[in-house]
Amino acid sequence: MSKSYRSSSTDGEVRHIVCIRCDQETNQKVLQSVEFRWSTPDGDIDGFDNYEIVQCMGCDEISFRIGSSTSEDFDYDEIDGYTHPETVKLYPSRVMGRKLLEDEYLLPDIVRSIYKETHTALSAGLKILAGVGIRALIEAVCKVEEANGTNLEEKIDDLVVKNILTPKSAVILHETRFLGNRSAHEITAASDTELEIAFDIVENLLQHVYIIPRKAERLTARKNRNQR
Image (cartoon, rainbow, N blue to C red; front, side, top):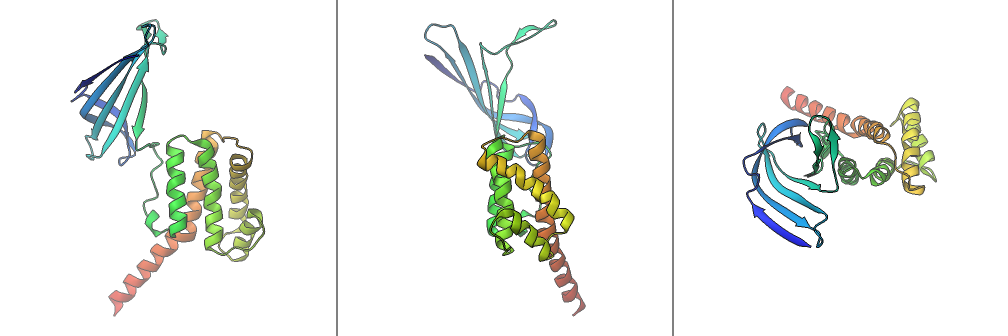
């Protein structure tokens, strides 16, 4: 295989990609880049990878972009004829509209750790791992809250007994548990929509059980200090 590298191949160009901080598509300038071109020994197949350090022109956040294409990948339309589409990967991985919870630092350590790993898996499109992580998050909440039961179903029901969950919330959480079971035991990936909904449910759980009560405690403590 023949290989060649070229520095500064796309320096200064502007990309329109999702910013991990702005949580929307923004213009991002290529600060520095290296182009890697390759071809098979017989010359039948060739391709390229553009490695780029990019900076958001809105918030200045810096990240990494890889744009790749090969002669085997092509699209066709009546205007442009045959074109070679570019496959893009962003690091850190991100999904627009799926930022970490703003106050995730208020979560218990074990819950926060699993939450961030699950978020990373979801952002990277690792569907089975994301599904397993969603189940693990529910398990972590049950462990921290010392829920009783021999299985996850019984532990979720015990959260209702402890007044941590409402009966309606428990029913919704059981549906999320089923999704995690498919990922963990059947090695079956959920759809993007199912994962998005399940993660929304779990994030609402974390907000309700930990973040909102702790913010309320801080607000009460500040009020008491001001009244002294």
